[in-house]
Length: 233
Image (cartoon, rainbow, N blue to C red; front, top):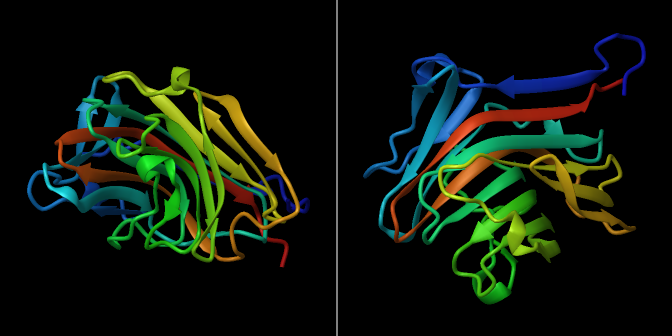
């Protein structure tokens, strides 16, 4: 972390308090054509960004991320989190974490079909996955480097999301890319302190992805947060 300044970290936080997604130029989003028009809903005193999917199966993604790939793994520690609500926990698939493409690109992160974790069209990512096509329908702590899965830990079902209740998901990746921590509701749920790179040295971005899996649902994103050490060069 830069020590020549009282602002030694880069922090980006979006609370979605505006009235239209076009009012947030630092945000990228992807909407499902049928029902997933991404819109900001003012719910009480909180703004929330709705990511809706339709009934197509393994077809489309609704997603949100920050607007730039400013989060270079291997340069500094990285941390992100998002607080979300899911209106219905039926046939869901979603990912919260860092990915190597902006949400405006229709790229998928991971799958856990029949409890086998695969990294999909993204080459590098790290975060928390839920996939109803898994045999064990729980949250998974996942990471991948250059198209290879490097972490695939299933969590106890006690951490599973509950319909219409907030859940906060996040992850931390060390500067050397060999250590990581995953969080659920601000609780550390899994940690790796190893010697193998979990993610390649590449540009990433914090994101939330909601995948179609044949049942329509909406993920409402309360906030999206990212943090990294400020560059010293």
